[in-house]
Amino acid sequence: MKNKTVIKVLLSILILVFAIPAGAITPEEVKANRETAQAEREAKRVEIQAERETKREELKEQREEKIAEMKEKRIEKICERFSELSSRVSDRFSNREEKLGEWKENREAKLEERRNKRDERLATRRAKRDEARAKYYEKLEARAETDEQKQAGADFKATVEADVDKRRDAVDAAIKVFRDGVDDAIASRKSDMNDAISDFKSAREVAISKAEGACGGDDVDIQLIRETIRSDLQAAREAFKSARESIAKIGDAVPGLAETRNEAVKAAIEEFKSTLEDAREDLKAAFNSEE
Image (cartoon, rainbow, N blue to C red):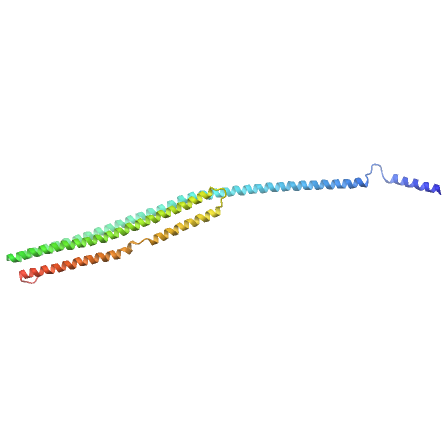
C-alpha cells in the first residue's frame, strides 16, 4: 500500500515535469505582458491623439491667420475706397457746381440782355414821342398870331416838357426799384445756395474723415463704418435738399415787385395826364379854339 502511494507521487511529479516545457512563461508573466501591451497601445493612442490635436490647432491658427489677413486686406481696400469716394464725390459735386455756375451766368446774361432790349424799346418810343411833340410845337408856333397866343404856346410847351421829364423820372425810378428788387432776390438766393452747398461739403468731409479715422483703429468694424458713413452722407444730402427747398425762389419775389412798379408807373401817367389836361385848357383859352 505504501509503495502504491509513492508510485502515484512520482507519476504526478513526472506529469508536471513533462507537461511544462522548458522556457515556457507563467500565467503571471502572460498577464504582465498583456498589461504592458495594453499600456503601450494606450500610450500610442494618446500620442496619436495629441499629434492630431496639435495638427488641428496648427490648422486652426493658420485659418485664423488667413482670415485675419484677408479681413485686414479687405478693410484696407475698403478704407482706401473712402479716400477715392471723397475724390469722386468732390469731382462730381464740382462738376455740378460748374454747370450750375454756367447756368446762372447764362441766366444773368439773358436777364441783362432782356433789360437792354426793353431800355432800347423804351428809348425808341420816347424818341418818337419827342419828335411828335416837337412837330406839334412847330405847328402851334405857326398858328400863333398874337403875343398872348405865342406866350400861351411857350407856356404849354414848357409845362408839357417839364411834366414829361417828371413822368419819365418816375417811370425810370419805378423800373430801377423793380430791377434792384430782382437783383437783391437773385443775390440772396445765390448767397443762401452757396451757404447750403458749403454746409453740405463740410458735412460730407466730416463723414468721410470720420470713416477714415475709424479705419485706423485697433478693432475695426468695417460693417459699422460702412453703415455709419452711408447714414452720415444720406443725412448730409437730406439736409442739403431741405435747405435748398427752403431758399426763397426768385419767382416768388417778382409778382410783388412788378405790382409795385406798375402802380408807380400808373400813378406817374395819371399825374401826367392831369397836368397835360390843365395845360391844354389854358392853351385853348388863349387860342379860343379846340385842340
